Length: 156
Image (cartoon, rainbow, N blue to C red; front, side):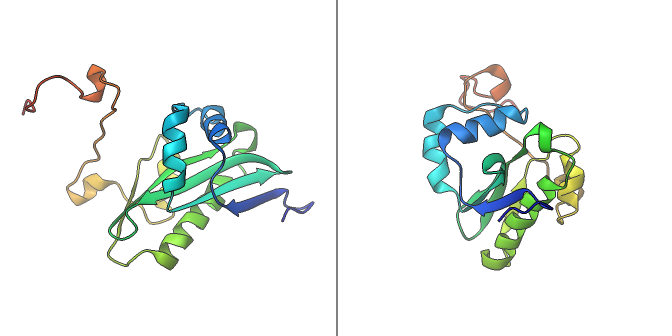
């Protein structure tokens, strides 16, 4: 419920495909194909949407297998509402649900872009390099940057 003192309301769930794409691009994140978003959203383990005066202005999701591995994704807040602790509110809701329902042995990961790492550190996340690990990624678009080359064997 929103009040005059706090015009923001955090609701459990996921946005529509259109709202998801708008929230990401408004916040400066990459757009995703509508078909991909339509497939992804129903597979959310837990999600929240942040509303301001009834309009969605932020979101966050937890995805994963429900037992051993989880990833926090799609954390974003519209730029007009940033700097008000709203990203912290989204993270608090996601981590509270993980603490409530995820097994104690579960591995929870995320990708921290830029200064977002300082927010995530407040919720107990640490740089994987300090644990002799590195985060890695691959884009599936087939571009050279994605690692989607034609060689069947990695060049190591």
